[in-house]
View 1: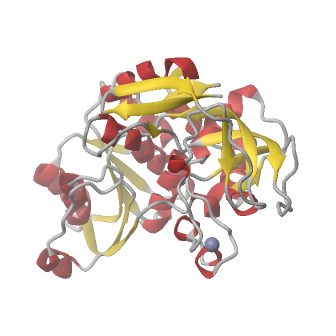
View 2: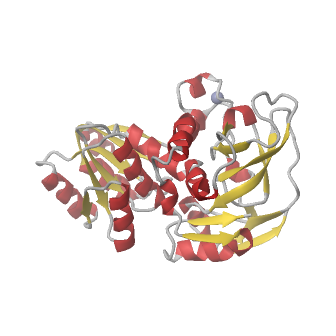
Length: 339
Ligand SMILES: [Zn+2]
């Protein structure tokens, strides 16, 4: 099969890779219908993470082509969405709704779903069946559920977005934008998008943002306070992962408020004294997308949400290198790859 390999920062190639085979009786093999490039794939692409001959991709939807002897809930031909983290969906951590930290979890990034096929470990727990064969126009949204939508949704839930609340969103990448969509669905009264890019501001408004703040850092925090009677936001979504974005999120949150942080943390170190003084709830990490998948798939199937709008470029898998370039240069918010 063909699949994406990152040889070194900036060097992405589509190559022949070995076809996946069942390794455990709980595995399934899927033929990937659509995959995409994640904002987190840009960390190694830009040289912030070490990378050498690494298979790429952790977002996917597809069709089951083989199942292991112990797979009970799936059959060949099922159309499925899965999380970027595998989970048995039965351990105590999974039962509590934190499937991304399942005691048996592995990351799909090590398997590399920017490819024609993939082996899915713990298939019964990881994959969720769609109601049927997806209409072509729903494919981008269903693919978004695999990570960016699920991650934005977790951030909004962790930030306790709800009726009567003001939600501030730090980060205008695909996850931040879908955090806005989630906050809207969860009934937040006011959603403040922190963005200085006109195209992203437009999408933020389409997804439910009521206000835009262009200022960043301390100025951005001051604007949020000014807009909330001096209190700060009830709920803050952090969707970047840098020192500046994390400080901005914590400082923009009111005492007793909630910060949901889902940007992959890079070099962030928090000041204990400041944190002690803030009195805010912090919950974040790799999103337990599996918890939300059944509900998200249904919302998409019923055409109640359109998260696929974050994909503003579609390329064949063979042109993945151009997709990475476009996202790196911010010519594209998110790139969908067809197999
Ligand atoms: Zn588990």
